[in-house]
Image (cartoon, rainbow, N blue to C red; front, side, top):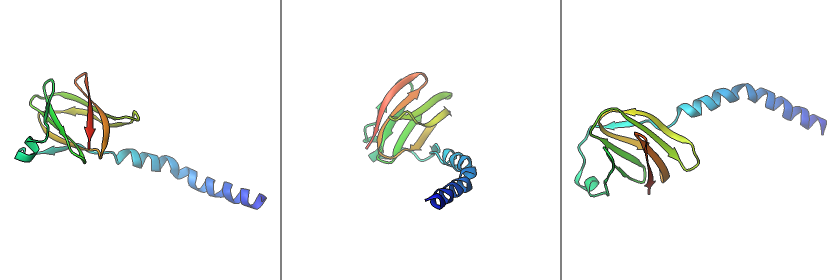
Length: 118
């Protein structure tokens, strides 16, 4: 019994120094915002584009597309758990945030929207 406890303590001491590095790597692996240069296709245009205050967006099962006609848009995407998926400033253009299926809260320039990717 004592040998098992000592072995377990030894394994934990061996693994713990690497724990902060592993956590930092996982935080860096979050989704990136991708600027989409291609024009909107006809099937995408029919895909429930929602016009909000000063921008438009639509969702797919894989992510969220944002269309900004103006520059300097403060954007924050948050999961239902409260985890910030992406936060930053976007200029004018069309952008894609890969999210996967789920319900998210999108905050753009101090206004919030509930977004469902299905």
